[in-house]
Every structure is written in structure tokens, then in C-alpha cells.
Image: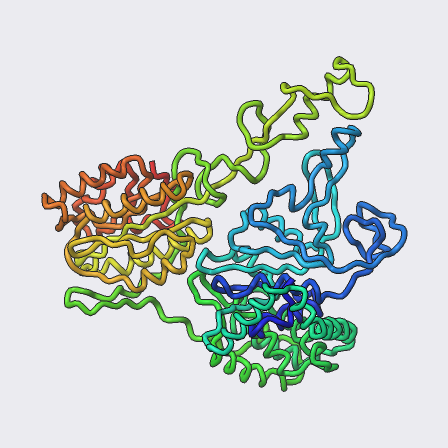
Length: 634
């Protein structure tokens, strides 16, 4: 394994991991960064630095000696072993994570027994999830439950077990592949963004060390053994000092004031900053938390918690942090009088971020206007039952997820309990005389799983002059932002096609990074004629390419237009060409958002929707407050 001390740069990441090693109560680390930045290498190297554990002998859960609330209790004897780093693959199944019925004992001895999963193996160690943003939602839910309670509760296949599961959660992710669910994001105590160094000398040293490691891993590790041993001893010493580190009331007020200034949700941020500041003080050998410890903790604990919207950029600007620390200094010097009648105090809130601004220099181009306030959009759903990747939009036959029933025909995997239940009454007739069960093919039952799938949501946006001239683009931008936020929450893949002037273009190829879609929307140019036919043709081509890449991901097209067609690259009548192009999308779920405004309406968008065999809704009906029922694109 590559030594922790041999990693070049990434000081914040290494410090965040070391602070969690000193104080596991901080809550783990989320590592965000572009590909090829040694995220996984650093995390895996941490395991070698963790102090050894005293565990109950023969305990499958690695419990502290004397633990009574363990399925393997009572324990006898004590042994020492290294702390474990357990990796949770993105494609892991639910039973692999939480555990399941011990199949061998069920079949050979005919009794129910629990086979522990990864949550049990990670107890008192590190649970590492690479590409955590791609983890299936049902696994995320299980992780949230275990992280919140410190225990894993298993109720499945006739087994009811509860066991300790306290672990240091470390996740790595590439933001280009999609963001993390807010609930899981908040569970990570600290977050660090890593980037490849641009300094030539640093990059040269990275290459030199990596090549030396690949040439002779044993010799390379030996060169850094003393440095790693020194870090391991520092962690041990800091853990011993941790209980003696005091957190003065002045620093508590400083922490509360900084968190209030950044308007973070809840109180978890305050607690994490306090624990991280205490661990940092212990790490540097101090006996009392000081301002420098708080500032370091704030840098690591607040960047992912100050995001008010999925499209806000994560991180804290240096000036914002400096201002917040100055404001907090006033509170740190005040006497402790408790909260007043107006509730807990705080500094001035950061100024809100500016809205989207567009570009474009051509005479007919206009910058995209400030979008109208985003609202909560109603669910736009693809009809029928699909088999796509797990998500939260449309109904699907799930390959993973919760088992709802068994079947002799359809299903994925074996429904063990129903199989055994069906076979049990026939054991005497089959001549069973000893342990185990006699099974036949007729006993087998398949597990039928149901859930929701994610979809490809393709936004086709009319950016022509007629939309901009009547100031509709502000409302359209607000609607698209709302729909993008909805797509973010439902784990969809999104793309954006715009049409204006003489042609259409793919403003954003389909991606899981919806914040990239919001960024492209801000840069969208408007003006010119309305080539509606070209927009529909471009959408058709994008969908054809995506079907080849992933045939199971069903698409949903959201067309935002007033229905006017004033230009066509097909050489014919613009309106007729648009209706012909619509025929190419007849087998696709389509929702047409009618952006026409005013008392006199031509109803052209409705005609386009009829040609597309889709649903037409008015722009002001997209809000959850005004649209009655679920809009199904049928």
C-alpha cells in the first residue's frame, strides 16, 4: 500500500483525515475532486496509521470488551487487532451491506442465523465509499440510519438483529458525475476539495515517487516507514490528550457566531466545528482550544453546509471567512449571558449570490435575463414501468432495492424465505431424516423488487426573439431552474437543447451534473427567429445517441416554447416542418410547457403537444402550488 507520508501536497485532506483519526466523533470526511488526484490512494493509506484496537475475542462485530448489547455476547477473552478499512462498492447489494440470513446454516442445519455485513465489519474502523455520489439511494438510506444511531438494525428474511456500528465514514467523489443527496452530505463531518497541482516542481515529484513505488513497492514503503510510524504515534498521543483539552466559553461563542453568520442548517455544524477544533488543539499538543483551531475547523466543516441550493458553488471564500471570524471575535470577548429574547445571536449574513448573467456580442443576441424565483415543481413522470437505474422519478422493476413479494416467473435473485417456507411442509414426504432441507425446482421462488428509476430529462428551450421580446425568458429560466432542482433530487440525467436564429444546438450534452446544466443556462443567448423544427430534430438525435449508450434509461422531453415557428432549416413551411419533426418523438414521453402569455392566446403550443402526443401545461401551472395532480407525459 502506498505510504500516507509519501503523498505530495493535499495538506487539507491529510489534516482532515488525521483529525478524524484523533476524534472519530467528528463524523468522517468527504473528498471532492477531479479524477486522478490520488483521492483513493490517500484514504486507503490512512488505515495503516490507525492505532490497534482491543476487541472481544471471537466477536464478529469487533465490540469493545465488556459490551453487553451485542448479538455475540457474552464475550470471553480480549484480543488486539488493527483497525479495519472496509470498502463499500457502488454496486453492492443491500444484504451485503447490512447482512442477511446465513444460507449455509439454513440449508445444512435448518436454523436461522445471521451473517454480518459490511456495517458490522466497519465497526470501530473506517467505512470507505468510492464514488459515493453514485451509490444507490436505498444503500444511502441504510448508511444514514446507521450513521445517525451508531447501530445497524436488520429486519429481513426472518432475521431480527441489532448490533453496534460506529464507523468513520470516508467518501470520495467527482462532482462532474453528479452531486450528493443533501441528507448524506450533511452526515460527513468535514469536506475537502482536491485539485491537481499546477506547479511543475510538485507534479514532477508526484511522478517521481509514483514511478519509484511501482518499480519496488516494498523498498519504497520501507523508505517512508519511519515517517508513517511517527504519524501513528502522533495520533496515539493526540487521542490520549483529547479528553484533557478544554473548550472555553469564548471559543464556544466564536463557533456559534461563525456558524450563524454562514446561515448553516441545524446544529450539527456547530458540534462538528467544536469537535474538530478540539481535535486540532490536541493534534498540535495544546491543552486549550484557541482561535486558530476554530478557524481551521471552520475551513473544513462549513464549505458543504453553507450551500443553500444545489446550484450554489461549494466552498468558502477567503474574504467571507475573514469577515465572519472578525464578527465572531466580538462575540468571543463577550460575557456568557445566554440567549436573549430574540433567539441565538449571530453576525451579519453573507450577501446573496448574484443571479445568472448571460453573454453574447452579436447585435441580435441578448443576455439571458435574471430568472424568476424558482419554485417547487410538480413531478413530471414517464408513463409505464421501466427498468432503469435507481432514482425517484418513474415506476420501475428494480434489480436492487426492497423485496415486495415472490414469484415463480418474474424476479431478480432468490427469495430465500419463501423458497424455504414452500419446501418445509414436504420434507417428511421427501424422506428427510437429518439436518438440512431437500429442495426441488418447484420450491424455488424469485424475489420481485419494486422501486423508482431515474430518467433522462432533456430540456428543449425556445430562446428565440419572440420569447425574449415579451420578457418571457425570465419566467422560463425560473421554471427550468426549478425543474433542474427537481431532477437533482430525483437523481436524473439531464441535457439542454436550445434553438434560436437559424438552427438548434446542444447547450449541454446529457450529464448527471445538474449544476453544470444551470451554469450553461446562465450563459444561454437569446434572440432571432424560431427554428422549432430544428430544435425537435436536434432533440431526436440526442435521444438516439443516448438510447445506444443506455437502452434502459427512459427519456422525458420537456419542451418550453410558445409554439411559434418562424424559421426552418428543412426549406419548407416552418409550421408544417415543425409538426413533421414532432412525429419523430411520438414514442417519447413529452411535456410541452406553453410559454405564451397575455389575454389573447393562439394556442400553438397545444397543437405542438398534440403532434407530439404529449401533455401540454401552461408555464404558470408547473408550480406544485397550482398544478393539481401529477402530470403524466402520456
